[in-house]
Structures are given as structure tokens and as C-alpha cells.
Image (cartoon, rainbow, N blue to C red; front, side):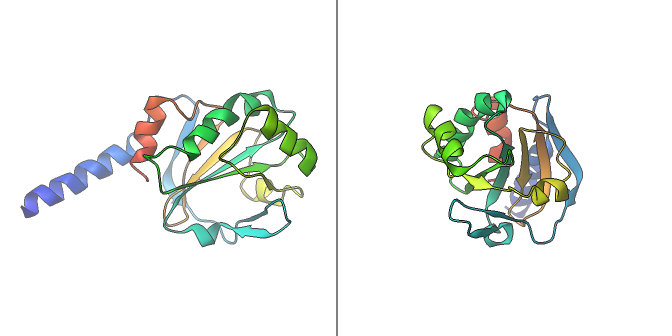
Length: 169
């Protein structure tokens, strides 16, 4: 019995570290730790990443003028409501200096129902995380450490991605 438990543990770790067959996912060789990651909700309240330890967290950086962001946002919305990923938090963070009205229209036009809007208007977080463009999605494990990034857009409802991300849930 002990051997079986050890074997399952080892196999699950190997599977979790397997890279999905998706071009623009970059998996960190070493986990990255950041101090004090914060951004704002629509009421200008500070949201702290550290409050979400124990959850898989995706920070998705976007802007209303970004065509690839528009393309991927519906699949990100679907990801948030996926019943097989009940331990996931998705934070779409607008870094385009768009106001709330414009951001809400963007969500309404795309029929986004499961996500809330967040902001990094000063782009402090974008600079701290060394973003090179939008969309970029940064994935944090349950300990709050960055383990991967999606550079550019993907379909978050793609089976290959869902199989891979479930290993971190």
C-alpha cells in the first residue's frame, strides 16, 4: 500500500510538470516568488495575491484595444466557471488605462458573465512582473509562486490546457 501511494505521488508530480503541447506557455524551471502583489477592483479596493494562498491563481493582463485579448476573454470566462476547476481564481487585470465604463462595455460585448474587472492603471504590477505585452497570463500555484506564463492569447477551454492545468488545481 505504501508503495502504491508513493508511486501515485511521483506520477502526479511528473504529470504536473509535463509541458502541454501549447506553443506560448512558458513553464518556469524554478518557481518565482514576488512580494506584495496587489491590484485594484472596480471600487478601488486593493486586492492582494497573498489572500488567495491555497488556490490556483491566474492573473490575466489585457486591454480593451487588444484584439487577441478580445479573442481569448470568452474562453477565460468559461475557464472560471469550469466545475472541474473549483479551486481556481481568475483575475483579468486591465492595464490599458481604460476606464470602468469602457471596460464594462468590453465585458458586455463579449458576454463575460463569470469574471470581474480589475485594474493596474499605474502599470506598477505590469512592470514588477516584467510584462512584455498583452495578453499575458501569469499562473500562480497554491503557495502563491509563479510557475508558468502564457505569452499571447490561447484558448483556455482547449482540452490540452485543461488537462494540464487540472494537475495544479
